[in-house]
Length: 150
Image (tube, rainbow, N blue to C red; front, side):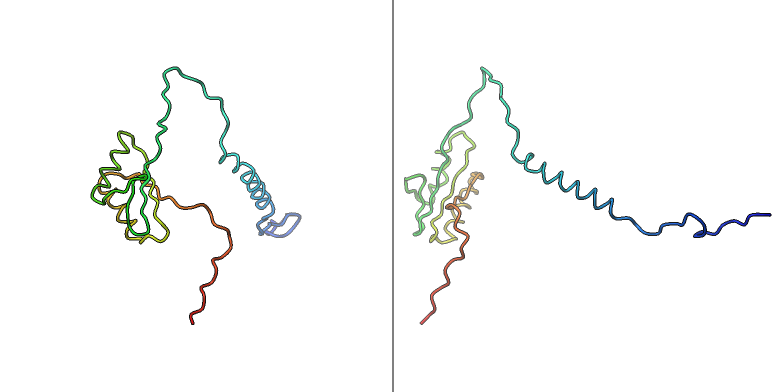
């Protein structure tokens, strides 16, 4: 008696045509947990005891140059009011040889164009490290609605 070859799907073993997603989901959840645990550790850094050196020089501890734009458009460098054409020269003189940062503080009621004009004047004269300073965070509550017109 000769044996006939079996057809696919007959007999003890049958092919499985479905994808088993359970192992994939298990691996992905484990990876998610690993990343959730390690992400905060990467952001905070590691504490180290730095070695000391006799020839090391301290970093520059100069105060930043503060440029203030008042609500009437007047420009001050520190507490000294300056003319718009003398602004860049005064800021460069205060910066000296350092590559420091200029803090630009604009009054809330100052015209946007005045603040941008000061930034443009400084940038045109080679002062490119300008930081715009704002007040602290506000509460999460929404601003009050405007009063109805009568």
